[in-house]
Image 1 (tube, one colour):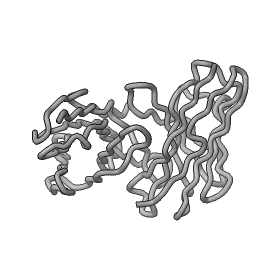
Image 2 (cartoon, rainbow over the protein chains, first blue to last red; image 1 turned 120 degrees about the vertical axis):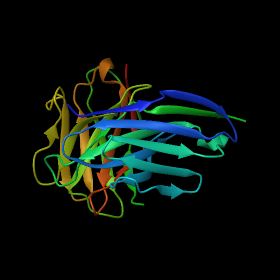
Image 3 (spheres, each protein chain N blue to C red; image 1 turned 30 degrees about the vertical axis):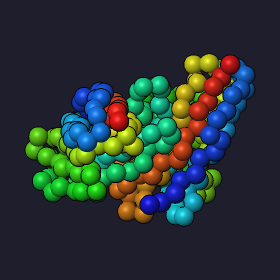
Image 4 (cartoon, chains in turn blue, brown; image 1 turned 90 degrees about the vertical axis):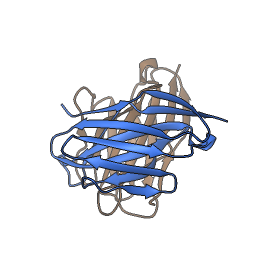
Length: 114
Length: 115
């Protein structure tokens, strides 16, 4: 059974802190690892990682994948209150269709205090 | 990124009624769409894969007669919760992959409350 595990499940920090969110996966026919940010409604896309060791960056957020260890991290530097959200990690696999199914982790609830 | 529209955003209904949720890809065609369910403080659980022109593929444990899926066109998939009961109350979200099939874009979700 495909499985994605995130840690920590929740994190409380102060503005300016740097946080690291973890994601491990066990997925058959792994295709890519995706990170999403979910505030009150639907998840919004952050990153897609396909290759090991190549860091992707967007502003204060960055992410990297280790396909040997089946692991990914999401870093957020200089956190702001607007970063407060649930961060979801999902593994994409080649399912019965050409477009892979996503298996989601439990999410990490990040709370950034002023 | 691509835009996926989901409607309605909120439904409150009586037990025994059926509820239809629509998911539209606004600026791209989607031969495949996905339907998820999310309970409070839990992650998204894939319910089914909606395929345009063919039957939906349901995940293990999801009743296909309870959750009817129709992929009517290349831009529209609907999920109908038939004879809804309070235990069906949840947050339902649809997604559609981009043209390359790599990134899935999500609708805003539908919060269903069955009284």
